[in-house]
Length: 340
Ligand SMILES: Nc1ncnc2c1ncn2[C@@H]1O[C@H](COP(=O)(O)OP(=O)(O)OP(=O)(O)O)[C@@H](O)[C@H]1O
Ligand SMILES: [Mg+2]
Image 1: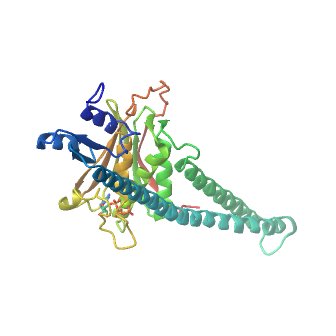
Image 2: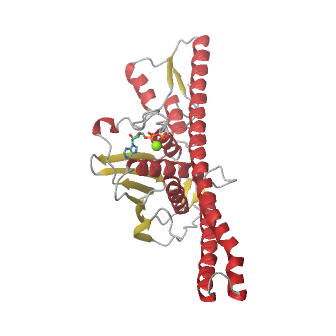
Image 3: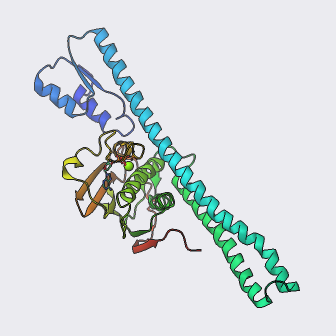
């Protein structure tokens, strides 16, 4: 017998701890009846071995479990690299574009100045108008570059790999911008941010979930005349709730139960790995939360994330409730290409 708690209690404690729950758990017990085995597996045990046991069998099972974890970690890493690679390609193009028109505008400024001061091809009042436009274009190009680099900074927070109490809204905004820059769609976004508290989370990981969900929504609405996206945050008791809804084609009922499985994708080869939602669910579970989908074919899909504001370990909220002003922008229209 174990001291203070039995194996089932230990299993429950481990599987409810966001940092420990990833550790594979083997129940080694003398209880061989079916009920006990099912109870153990339901509580999250990865393996169940009944006594008497064989050393070699245990060693082999441990080795297999560790290999499985290694493969899972490799998946996560690969998916991260894929989404980052796509992101970098889209973003660098989007930086080059405004820089090149800012550069062109900048180069024309001396010519217009000369025409105003010394005369030339254009009368001075026309040259003055062109000069004014060129200065505006250069400023707008630089503003766009700043906006995109700010969004990138908001998306990947360097030097902050762990859990802390965070405002999740800048991450949502940064992700929206990055997805938009990458998919170049005209998009109507309805935002209602009503979550008053900071949330105990790993912000970089959560941003990855937002990226997956928003990218899925935008991909699902590809080719639509009026793509619309709703993003809502709110607090329900001790949970933060984040909802991402689209008016895409929806998800057929028969596949709704499969979309969170690894490698499940309906996208053509080369366009989807089918890991986006699988990894998103893992990340949400890492936060002791849950992610669910509700979808009506023909009307759209709604993904809902629920995570405890305080985290799992009763991490003490330091009381610094961030004073995020309630945002209810029922409609924010983003055009592409951006108007100059
Ligand atoms: N908002 C949505 N609308 C319609 N279908 C969706 C939506 N989100 C997910 N799906 C369906 O769920 C499947 C799995 O999504 P998931 O994000 O896991 O993988 P993927 O998008 O296909 O590929 P990846 O995310 O790896 O690029 C998608 O292929 C699609 O069929
Ligand atoms: Mg996806």
